Image (cartoon, rainbow, N blue to C red):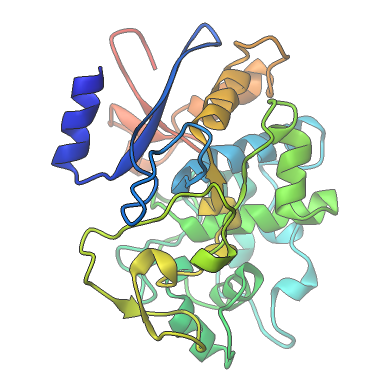
Length: 317
């Protein structure tokens, strides 16, 4: 296994990675390979925190499904019914069909936003442009991005087809806040992380000087390439991971940092394999995995359920 990992790291120019393997809910292997920073060459450790990007989505999906079990969220309900009036700027109007998008459609990426054809592409990664559009002198928050996008035309009708949407999962984070009265992070800790035995996972920060001590450094493929910063103060050309996007606005779809041990705890708890009760009921776990009734998925051997991509194998899904 070690040689395979080293070959993988060499082929993909990966400075450091961590691995955890479990069997029947028990941790079998946990090991770091490479370094946590190319500058310091300090070896990476399994307790080091790393941005997990869209692995945030199964956490958000599990949170929404848990709140459904508690009768706080109805998947068939219109998403806008949960959002507070403050989600839209005063005097603004929802774009056509926005009000028909359901919570289920957000979970399944069929809300109607398609970053492959949209004029904004993926608005969650267009913070500098959106901030200028909104007349802000700072990066736009998740609420501000959502408020603006709810006024923009959809790319497809809600429920028509699958199209991966970070924006949809950001809206789910706001729904969680509306029904719990907590911030998204606190609600995730209360209903998902703490019950799974997770203590180190947290929302990350954009700038290196704001990150926690045991978070790794991030390196772009081309170390010399620079992009415009989302911040109007400080260096205006930065390395992509250090200000090319605004991580603080990405909580529910891609804002978490975690170590590999906590990620394995989440998977074990989700499957109900550990010593603690499963995070979700069997019905909810099946909802995460079932094939959506969408044109894009009607013949595929792989599809997006709720928060996770599902592939068929000879042993089932």
